[in-house]
Image (cartoon, rainbow, N blue to C red):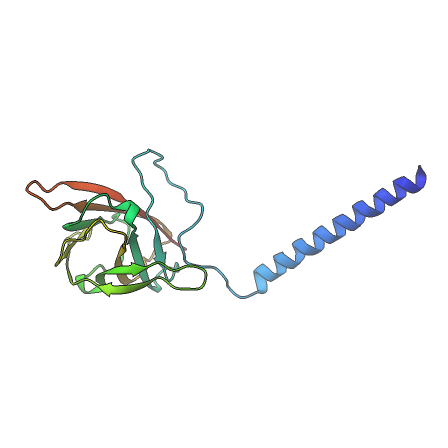
Length: 194
């Protein structure tokens, strides 16, 4: 009985030593190792409003650091678009204090990245962008109707990130072509700045 108890205590001590070694390694590696953080959209997302009307859209952001130059791909996948688009309106929160200018925006058919590839434009679509005077929204007028097809499209922004850290929700509303144009909510991108 005594040898069985001693054997169990040795196994528990060995397990504890192994677990603390692994934890210590990851703690030290995390503090001193290279910065491996990615600026991709997060797996876990927190929002104040948990209504069912919110629809999360995919995005890619090259940098999450404050005041850092960043390229954003605000993506609309085929499942996000129920009908063709004539016009797109992006609403920005008031505290998103970045310089929004028409020349910093473009629109393209996009190829989504993965583990081994980067998100990139496959085909640029000529588009006129208009920024509201109060910078609360940006309207995009593509020179062709964007069909409801199997391709993903993206608004590309090349801007400096805002001065303040936080979460910023950018909403997308599309106007459909036809005799009576209807504006419909596509979804939202929740951007995180560290």
